[in-house]
Length: 97
Image 1 (cartoon, rainbow, N blue to C red):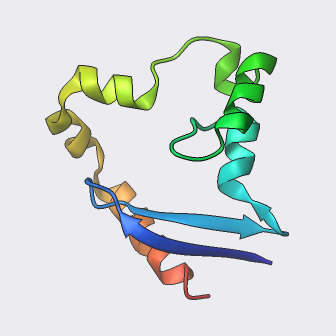
Image 2: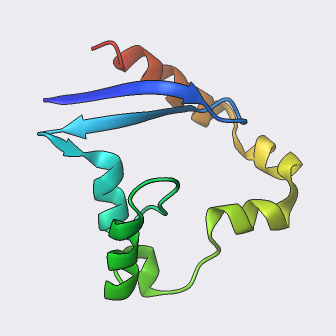
């Protein structure tokens, strides 16, 4: 069974939340697999992914905060367009299921 629960919105209006499937925390699984950067949680999992050079850690990339800092907040806010807003709405709807 899968379930998601939103708990707050970020400064761009995106719903932040936690999702679980089959008893597994999907946020944690993304960090472990090297496909997400830890932000406040899962630093140990990120360190293991970095050390193992898996996912994004296999190469080089701009970390999200660094990218936002170098591109200015106006551009970032424009990137949160219609498709992302639809995703936010869907996440809010399905968090009750």
